[in-house]
Amino acid sequence: MYSLTTFSQIKDNLAALIPVYTNQGGNSTLIITKGGKELLDERTVTWILHKIAQLYFFNVEAARDHYGSLLAKAKNIPLPFSLGLTMIPLPLRKARVRGDKTTGFLVLEEIESIEPGKKETCVTLRCQKQIPVYLSSKVAEQRIKEGKLVQQLFTHQFLPGYTLTSDTFAPGGQQLVAEKEEMEYLARTFVQILWHKASHLK
Image 1 (tube, rainbow, N blue to C red):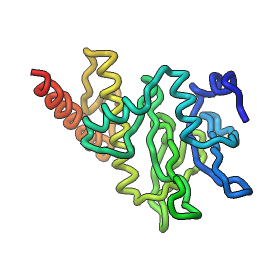
Image 2: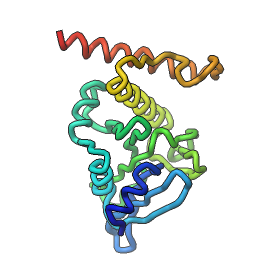
Image 3: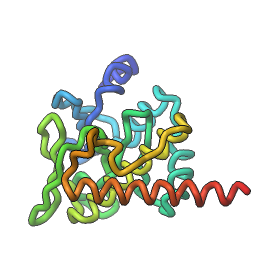
Image 4: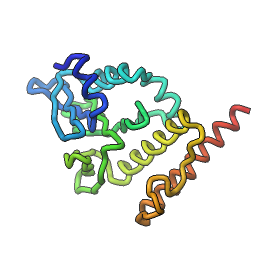
């Protein structure tokens, strides 16, 4: 298992936390780094998530309550640990026994592409690791959109002058149609949430 020092070294180098079964049927975590290195830890995803949260001075429960209220959701809330690290909860394994936890986390900034499959969705990370996600591609894409939205809300919190526009991530406006539509959706939702939040402060 890894020491706190090791977690300090990998906290800024995360790409994924994936729940896996041990040979004895217990729970452990496969950590994938930005460079594609795989590290197996005998502790659970939840334990590791909270350990990394401590290193960022990040309150997981408070963030879930806050961003969940903004997204009008109670579960599967993206977690913005920093300006460059947003963790998106997704089902990343099949349960062997009913009630087993299947949720892992992919780092938003490390997601390169999404491809629909016959039984699951395939997410390719920037390190070219392919991760099966046990959701339809439509639902997986929506979860990722929510992650992008939460990251923008988090950025706005620390940089109040920041404004999301449809070409924020494409200098010169060079975008594919799908990317442009997605950013316009995020921009509209971002403004709606801020307006809703402001109206409740009056």
